Amino acid sequence: MHAHPDDETINNGATMAACVAAGVEVTLLTCTLGEEGEVLVPELAQLAADQADQLGGYRIGELAAAMDALGVTDWRFLGGAGRYRDSGMMGTPPNDAPRAFWRADLTEAVDAAVAVVREVRPQVLVTYDENGGYGHPDHIQAHRVAMAAVDAAADPAHRPDLGPAWTVAKVYWNAMPRSVVERGIAAMAALGEASPFEALGDLDEVPFAVSDDVVTTEVDASAHAARKDAAMRAHRTQMTVDGPFFALSNNLGQQVLGTEHYRLVRGVRGPAGPGPQGWEDDLFAGLPG
Image (cartoon, rainbow, N blue to C red):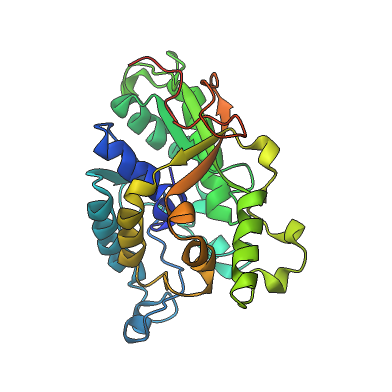
């Protein structure tokens, strides 16, 4: 469950592609169309929210292309496409727009997610941590909705009209281990390149880097790194794949593009994988089937 088109590819693209390749069903639930995103393609600048305000519709097409690259066929928008609008960055005017996801009625939004959980009946659900990774209001709201939906979906007394109760066995939050960020910065320094986080100062100020101690799972899907790269390029209004935002991926290659990390917050941790950290190597580790 993600806030905007492109979040899924950045955080989980390789994992999603690996699951599809293994015959595991994947459903993507996106909460907004990403209408407030910055347009990085000059010839499409008029799509922006302060101009024609057509970026959200355009990004549906980008998401479709990204899902095609990853092999995911079941992708949906929470409440239907356009029900909730991108809220923009924290403390900006779009936070107060009538349809802003940040202002969403939580009961309504949670029930929309419950309906999907009960229909799909997933063993595993992936979303953000309580800070939404880096403090974006839509990421925080997606976390709130996802976690509440997991609880509500498992309660037989809650909205039986939305389908039979279903308990999600494992819930993960996306995680970027501090050690991975440090290795990326070191790799760039070795090449004589500046860190994309230089303006933040100390590494402790990088908002999405978490202590390795809280990470539980490392999925090595490097065999599918090319699919993730193609999906990132599909989100072309939002990403310059060769630019500084993806400097970590550029400098560490498939190790970063194809290896994704998670924090298990609900469910029983599975057996340790082969790595030295003792992390799981599969989101489904320990589950039957």
